[in-house]
Length: 173
Image (cartoon, rainbow, N blue to C red):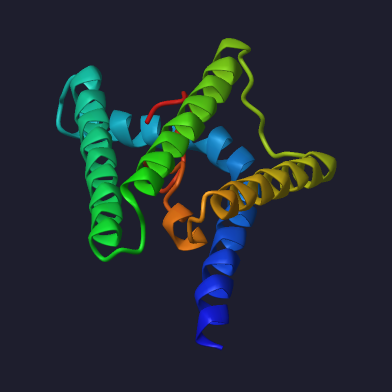
């Protein structure tokens, strides 16, 4: 029973994260830029600061937090290797997969930016299509993990470069 819980809980958590991502992606993309710009403008006005300087502070903070999450993820993998739960080869595979997914996400976000796409709220059909797409991606990732003898729990942080797992409206990390 304990072994089943070790597998079921991460799979459920991953499913919830993917589902929440599918639902929120349109709303986040549509509102994130405006809300961040709004707070930057308010701070700049309130304290009579240059808006670009305030923007730079936000970007530096976001980058620092992303770097910290990356360090924590690598530390977690190092601990798993030292405990014998992962091999160095599996750790390398995970890091390579993480980088691959990050590049795909950045390319997608860059394409959306270049096309000027900024959807408001996705339609029901778009939501269903996105859910199916995410389900397919999740299954492919689970198969990849299984094929490489990697426990799904080590993939929970995979592909989450920053800001709560979102690449940002402009493909930033």
